[in-house]
Image: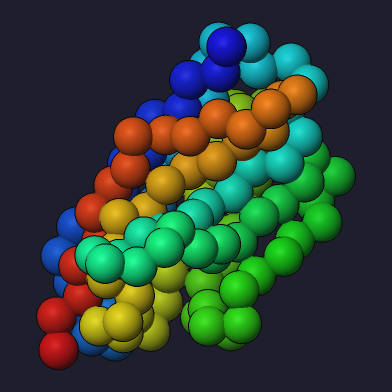
Length: 114
């Protein structure tokens, strides 16, 4: 089992920045992909960004150029630096990791006011 704990969400004005962190624990050996998804009220959960253990990165088009994902393999932690935030970025953000199967964190709320 893999446990994921997110932190760093909150309320920010449009144009501001937030940094999310997600620490993995438990059976962490062999975790390959880590990343972030988000879900706004009334919408489906969507990909934000993912990063492999080797550092290959994928971003949703809506966040390219504004968000940066990074990973510290020694700390089993993945980060999401979010700049130039927009009201449409408001959502619950979920950490995701793959070790044989997918694991989810409990989510952290990001609210961007206009």
